Image (cartoon, rainbow, N blue to C red):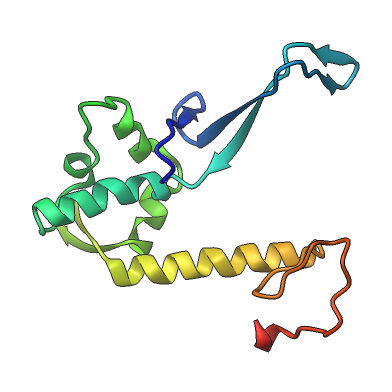
Length: 160
């Protein structure tokens, strides 16, 4: 955590979460299509997996309560009253089992943070990122070098 505030945005209906990053350069302009953004500010809106934000609430609930709970009792925050919108995101109900243990009693589901499942999920995310970078010919691994340099030794997938 950098300690810097981050802005998040939900689409209409709160089905998808986005991270908003503002880039501001003094005395800079951006050419966007046929227009010029004169003040140097540019906003990038990137889709984000809501499970990353939910992890904070799941870990906090696990430390405080240590028991299975309904998600709507876990994802609460007086400082961020919109945080329950995370539960409306399309993928949350489908993928929450990647970071929690789940029990179902009647028609209600109860969840408890699972560090083991979370680490497996994060490893899978990292492997997907590495695969995407490699498919775009971007060097990854301990020996990743700037694209302008030449690697004198070929690295195989098993060495990374």
